[in-house]
Image (cartoon, rainbow, N blue to C red; front, side, top):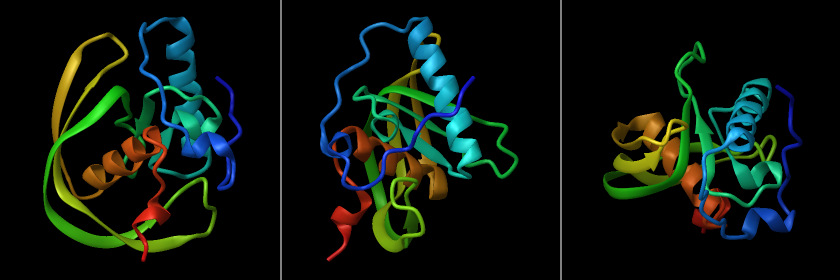
Length: 148
């Protein structure tokens, strides 16, 4: 594994809509592993491929305090959401910046895992927020876009 460079606000890759992952191969698995390592070292709970300069629909999330439950989401999308809540949110591409952002407190998302299995998950609270945040990155949207 190796640590990747996290792109900071202003890098054009963060505003680019990503392309779908068409094949889950050794390169994608290595990227996911490196992204997890990078996220853990940066003390984050999520990281999207554009944040490491790669414009693919891939993100990693682990909201467990002990970092034991990583989720790798390939071609993810939010199917539904409910119960809007406003809470503090940060981003590894905006070091030291935290703002209140309104997001759904409960979501249903679908994605493909590293084994090619189609998954659907119901998430709430921090996991729901992290999924929305990372999937936004895949669409070139940043958490500051929610600020007025």
